[in-house]
Amino acid sequence: MKIFNAPQIKELDIYTLQEQKITSAQLMERAADKCATWLRNKYPIHTHFTIFCGLGNNGGDGLVIARILLAHQYKVTVYVVKHSPNTSPDFEENLALLKDSITIKTIISEKHIPPIEEHSVIIDAMFGAGINRPIEGVCKILIDQINTLNNQKVAIDIPSGLPCEVADFSKENTILKANYTLTFEAPKLTFLLPKTAHYVGNWKILSIGLSENYKQTIETQYEYIQSKDILKFTEKRASFSHKGTFGHVEMIGGSYGKMGAVVLATKASLRIGAGLATAYTPNCGMQILQTSVPEAMWTGNLPCEHFLEGNYISTHKTVGIGPGLGIHPKTQTFLHLVIKATKTPMVIDADAINILAKNKEWLNQIPKNSILTPHPKEFERLVGSFTNETEKLQKLRAFTATYQCLVVLKGAHTAIADVNGTIYFNSTGNPGMATGGSGDVLTGMIAGLLAQKYTPLQAAILGVYLHGLAGDLTIKEIGMPSLIASDLVNYIGKATLHM
Ligand SMILES: NC(=O)C1=CN([C@@H]2O[C@H](COP(=O)(O)OP(=O)(O)OC[C@H]3O[C@@H](n4cnc5c(N)ncnc54)[C@H](O)[C@@H]3O)[C@@H](O)[C@H]2O)[C@@H](O)CC1
Ligand SMILES: Nc1ncnc2c1ncn2[C@@H]1O[C@H](COP(=O)(O)OP(=O)(O)O)[C@@H](O)[C@H]1O
Ligand SMILES: [K+]
Image (cartoon, rainbow, N blue to C red; front, top):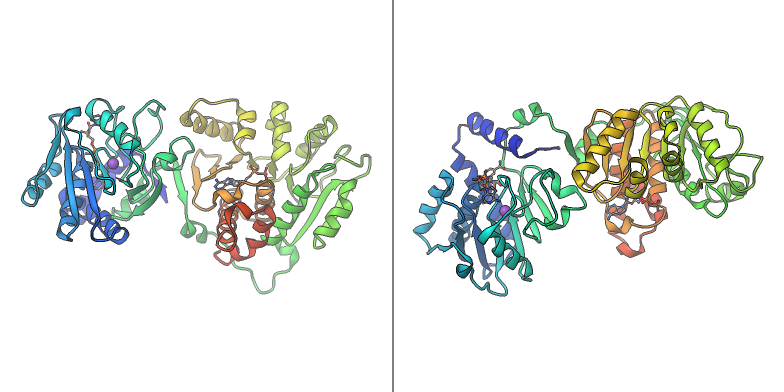
């Protein structure tokens, strides 16, 4: 699903009106009706709503929602926050309609800000996608006050004050902190980023029937990955296939005391369907690997017992490297040999990333279209620090372009940056996955998919999606705090039922 910025949403609206031969007021009615239906399903009939409306179309949505809720016997109080003389035509039209049913109160200055009933649900329809500068004056005072209240807060389209994209975001800005956000058609970029997502609360996408034809023509830099996106490229197994059909993963990593990471990654590569897997570890890992993953083969390098060092000769398997690797100087040299000897895309994780961060001149030598899977700290080691989300995304794009590789920046809504600059955000996963070893499982999954001849972009997207789904399926049966990385491996099978 494409993620649109504010000008693109506007274009899409205008095209939809022409294509469907409807007025903007009719589109507003449709959008508000979807919100009202959601509210009616969530809140019982005696609920009181306090609706704060701005003067643009977001305010217009609020007025229509009020009209629909009143018609369904809800108790509703409506305030229009009059911060400017300018209003939108659809706002005016709906203001006139609503005036027939209730008295609408106006907030012009601080003294008009009302006390709000303790159990009233606050609807935020002050500013939507049209926000173009920080909020000031009476709106700022009102939002600051609302943010101190424990009432449930539902934002329409986007919490007031939050931009769709992050360019002008600063942490001093006043932004309404919602429990729920009902957004139209697609999420906004800011819903998916760690520094801005907490304003949005739980968000729901409400489809309002915008032109699918026109959406196809809009070029976006961001996409949101859902099940229908991965179904487009998942492959069924042919009847006469054999283990050689599904590739051979060589999972390189491990060091004394960190062998579990390779165990998890190797197992995960097999669970996602690689035909064969070999774990390549220091000698002290041999028994551990052969006992805990009997399906996998083992190979190692004899000079050292406890960490990887020495020579490396490619056997042309699909290489994953990093889990449990350590950063011993001799291991650093070994990684350099692996990178130089490997000619096809590989998966580079954990300490392999940390080593590259110390030896940035090697980055040019990693095979084209390889996939790096840093968590935010590892990413920072690679690209240096960043002060805000915009800068982070810029650095992400610059990195993939410079080194012609993909980056999977892990976290809630993991971001997969393609070589061409498109960034795909994941929709699966949960905080139960914030536990040691989760990332190793992901490395194994992506390597296993690469071995099966998915393209690097497909392997990264599918791996990240199914990894999160395995986490989501796990917590349906055990509590989030109990989730451990082995559970993710065990639930890969159930996740693949969704492919
Ligand atoms: N396709 C869609 O997404 C649809 C969107 N609709 C609604 O339309 C909204 C967008 O409407 P508008 O473009 O009128 O935008 P808003 O309702 O967000 O209002 C923006 C207005 O406030 C002014 N403004 C912006 N920032 C300000 C600030 N900090 N202080 C004071 N004034 C400020 C702007 O100049 C503009 O006049 C959406 O968020 C949504 O709620 C629906 O009505 C119909 C369909
Ligand atoms: N709050 C969260 N929501 C969704 N996924 C998460 C969350 N926290 C962590 N994860 C996922 O768990 C994995 C953690 O990886 P990583 O930090 O490398 O762990 P480790 O190094 O212990 O293996 C990543 O895939 C990440 O996306
Ligand atoms: K809003």
